[in-house]
Image 1 (cartoon, rainbow, N blue to C red):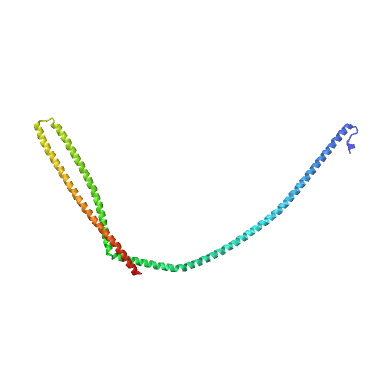
Image 2 (image 1 turned 180 degrees about the horizontal axis):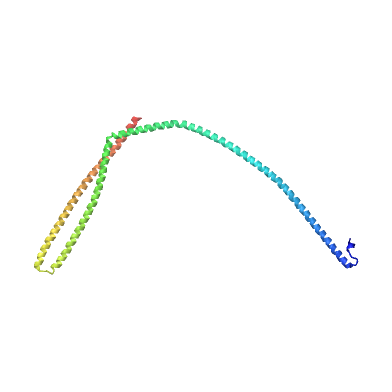
Length: 276
């Protein structure tokens, strides 16, 4: 074959070069073939490892699925048992509650009856005490004393108001007196200044007329002041009488109050022994 391809007139050197190239190509192809074979072997090894891993994973997956199914079955069984136990517990609790209610009802029945009886007795005692208080003369006198105390408080309030009014009137009188004396002093100074420049006869006439006017004004002011003083004395006398009356009322109230406490205690003790 090679002989057919090689021409007869070819140069041996060229033939040798081509032969060398062909040998190199063959070696290269063999190397590539070996490398490809090695790669295929590696791929086969990897494929076998992957196949083995997939087989193991499949077995583990089956095991896990089986375990999962068993867990679900166990959970369902546990839920069923818990539901049954809860129903039984509820039945037991309800039966115990009914028993306790029956026992409590039996135990509370006499207590409720006794409580109702005691309430009726207390109401009867309160009615009896109320009737006794209505027919007790000391309480009537105490009511009168309370009314007198109320009137006394009203009188004290009225006296307080009158004191305030009297103080206002007194202050106005003091202010009017001060103003009156101040006006007299001003008029006197003015008259003295006028008299200093007038004749002796005119001075005497003017002094007499001024003295008459001043005496008349002073008499009017004096009478009004005396009237106010008389009113103040009458008011103080009324206040003193009212204070004496209040002291007598307080002493009477203390006496009646002490006697009322003693009489009520004795009366309540006797009635309590009679009821027993």
